[in-house]
Length: 362
Ligand SMILES: Cc1cc2nc3c(=O)[nH]c(=O)nc-3n(C[C@H](O)[C@H](O)[C@H](O)COP(=O)(O)O)c2cc1C
Image (cartoon, rainbow, N blue to C red):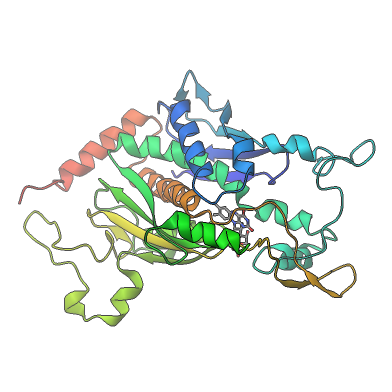
């Protein structure tokens, strides 16, 4: 058994939807905790005014009764409050009445770095909006809601996951200044985040197949977030330039390590140390001083689309990265331990830790 997540939703459509299957029955969910994660995703210096408008909240349509999972598909919805301004432009059905609000005119000015050009070519759209609406990182709201559910499952196994910002625009601090400066130049920034998972016991993931490797899965999950262009596990790229004697984590009595350069994963399996992963986000592609492009309607040189946008969203990205890492860890934990009911999962967890005598006293 494993967790599976299917999502749907456009940035300015009526809502974002997530269906999560494979959750054991009897897991207590806390609506306030999920909403708190949704709020965290909306915060951070350098966000667009849309974040004040949205104030995301989760709705549950199925799979939960009186706050406990039923072991049936869990259906989550996060409404787009901004949709009221796009009712004509993003109506799922042919809209009635005169065009009004936003999104009424076709977008023909693709932004370099966004889904715009590659998306319209691939899908045969005439309006760039038909590509950008789904590609937008608005979608990450439901990833965060699903990640919050995963965190509840991990908490039952005493695993905690936290994402933090390491750098914004190449700076390790003074982020407000670097963001203010980019905003003044009508430019954008990216950055680096780190996710750490503590309490992870050895044995999650597998070397048996490429798909089962925990490092494969974490890298794919992080790469699946919009704007991510690099992922490293543990010391990652830095390991390429040191000798083996300075790269590996020597084993001590108690089976703990003297260092954690591997970031808690060896041969695609958790080794009992903290899981440490980092991901790099490129600068956001919507610039208030637009980059050169071509008008797809005329074929003539033009400036790219300017649409309300964040200057930097690295703090939000840290929350999304935490969510997707949590989701993958919950998946591998369920694969390892199984269980239709949470009590079965916890019993399997206890039995496994007993078999491997974890944690060991040195
Ligand atoms: C949390 C978050 C917020 C984002 N906000 C914006 C934004 O306001 N404007 C923008 O142009 N791109 C934003 N992006 C990035 C784009 O969605 C992304 O660059 C685009 O979909 C193209 O995909 P790619 O960068 O993965 O190639 C954001 C990404 C994340 C993770």
